[in-house]
Length: 425
Image 1 (cartoon, helix red, strand yellow):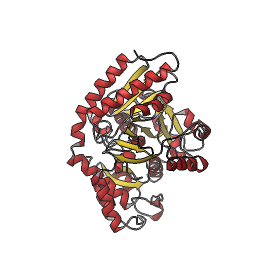
Image 2: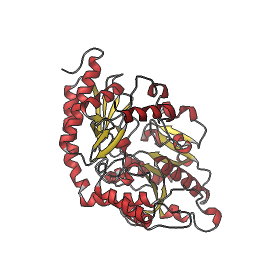
Image 3: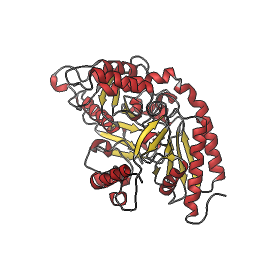
Image 4: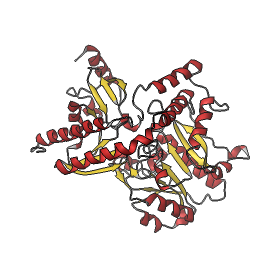
């Protein structure tokens, strides 16, 4: 191991605290974590010079690949002008342009307003607080109960965590945030007294942290019809599904659904910089006019930061100049074919779930984490959710990259099983 690698690992183990990580295991003397130092396209390199395919798009954020020259240039150009200015009492050109661009993806007079924040959790917090204040300022403050779906995930700040249905993450914090009721299906939601429900929250088309589980086709459209009839606000969490992941720019577009609030983050800047947005309608926005005490008193120091907005505009321009969405159907079909092969031929695979370029490969119990570690030997980086291996590469991947990723999972699963009782034939 190189001296600089060892120095970085030792400093990490002495001082850093990693998310979603049992620190005793991380800091154990036998554990040598990868130190990632460089990226290009769908590839990452560690400090020892080894190359890997970025199989989970750097925690579901990267869209067009690492070190894309167009995004790099946009950030450099903005940096030469100004890195950051306050959005409290001031505007900036890139934020104006980005707000206009985001609203252009939806029909006129629908999602017309954009509130910027920092990440997926804060985008959800904005929607929650904004929706509650909307009720208070329109004479419907008695409706305060949120409804979320079991095993859903909407972020880790306290309000967003209240919506989380994954017990191992959120059970200890139950009752510390807003009132939330959980349902497992649309039928359970329909059975609930609608007049008690303030808003319903969902990850459209597919739940992410719930081991990549798609919703039935048409469910989102039915949910929207119910919410409109019941006078319930609809909040869509597109933090994971936005920006092409499911095959369209936004997942809700596949079922022609326009929510009251749409939350985006992760891929908004192409995976470069923290930036989030909460889109909402004129009806919601107009309830915050008038007296000063009706304003939305919420914000962050780096709200609408110019560097992030410049990266986002560049990323969105690439969807057009590189035909990103147009290239996806062939890639999605190829991934489906390779995953079907894996499901059929590899006995370690229990199930495969896919929605666009998002896939979850469920393995036999106890194999998920070990398979992801072993996949590094075959040039793939990704992470499991329980025993489901996530495959969600940058959208710039080619079909041979997908072949390599699926084969790496096959070989790693075989090797993981062999350490117990044998592997794939």
